Length: 265
View 1 (cartoon, rainbow, N blue to C red):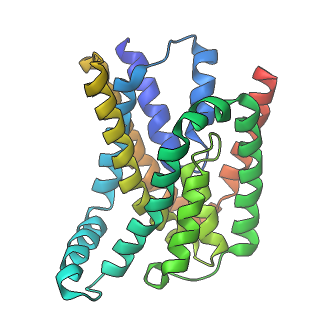
View 2 (tube, rainbow, N blue to C red; view 1 turned 90 degrees about the horizontal axis):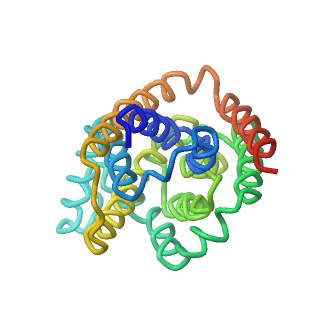
């Protein structure tokens, strides 16, 4: 892989991982638009690590508090500091892990069809618009409970379907549960940490078990590109959230679906 290709692919992953615009829809377009071969599992691991480090660094104070308070709550057998929110993140991660293990082969084959990606891109654009216009309320992070964690966690499991967008599905579910925009988005970002960690570990095991050779130059360059782009995307997404809402992403998804339809159908 050429280094400039690694940079471009890292940028695409960094932007699409946390914005509600579907990374899989973009990745299916890349080979068609560029003629590049599949980047391989080693490169996939690098960009996942890059985006994981980006969200951990950006929310380092929150992550530190959630982790430490969660650990302290175990021997105390009661909520300590922000431990409740930390455990809600853990609970919300379970559905995607379970369905990911059970349906991984089906998702990677049957559900990667172009018509599935186009359909989910449109459907979840509409749902995001409805949630942002009529669903959202004023609830904040401290109010998130078990019901919220289960519903948003199931939404993350649905996002295993290509074209859905993990952040898009979880933010949409959070808004429908009455969370405000910033709270729904932050909870989605917090949920990204354990699920992205799990995805990275699975790819690492695949590399180790199958003896896959890794292009370390592409690995490092792609990882750095995804890290820088992801942390920038998170920052400006939150900065502009209340000014523009979710409508730029709704419109973008509809345009993306039209492009996919024009290119593939």
